[in-house]
Image (tube, rainbow, N blue to C red; front, side):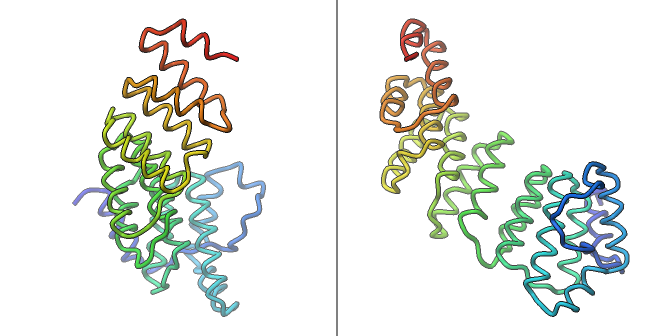
Length: 255
C-alpha cells in the first residue's frame, strides 16, 4: 500500500477526531507562522474542541462555519495532510456536508495539487453547482490536463449545470493549450447563447484561444467587439500578430 493511502487509512481509523478549535477567520500572530498554524490545528484535533463547540451551539450552521474555516486555513497553508485530517473528521463524525463544505473540499484538494481526491469528492457530492464544477475544471486546465478539463465540462453540461464566465474562461484556456479550434468555436457559440460575450475574462480568453489556434483575424474581431479590455487581452492580441510574423500589424494595435 502506498504511503499516501496508508496516511488516509490512518486518518480514517484514528480515534482522535479532527476539528477546528474556534472556526474564526480572523488573522492572528500565528498566521505568519505556518508551523504554529499546523500545531494549532493538530492540538484542536486531539481534544475534539470543534465537536464540543458544535454541540454547545446546537447549530448545524455553526458546524458548517467551523469546517469551512478550517478547510480554508488548510488551503491557504497548502497543507494537504491537515486538509485530509479535517476531511476524515467530517466522515468519522457522520456530519452531512452541505454544498459549501463540498465545494471547499474540492477547492482545498485542487489547490493542494491532489486532483484525484478533488474529483473523488466532486463525484460523491449529492448536489453540485457551477462552483463545484468550475473549480475542478480550472484546476485541470492549470495543471496541463486540458483533455480532462474539457471532459469534465461535458459532464457538467450533461448534469444540467449552466456554465458561468469563469467556467468558459477555463475551458477556452484548455482549448487554446490543445490548439483545438473546433471545440473552441463550439464553446464560442455557447458563450454567445449564454450572453457572456461581453465579459472581460471571457473576451480575453477567446482572443488567446484564437491566437493560439493561428486565427489572428478571429482574435482581432473578438478584440474589437470587447466593450472593456485589460492588459491580458492587449498582450494576447499583440503576441498573436508577432507569433504569426505580422509585426507591423501588431504595432498598429497600440492606440
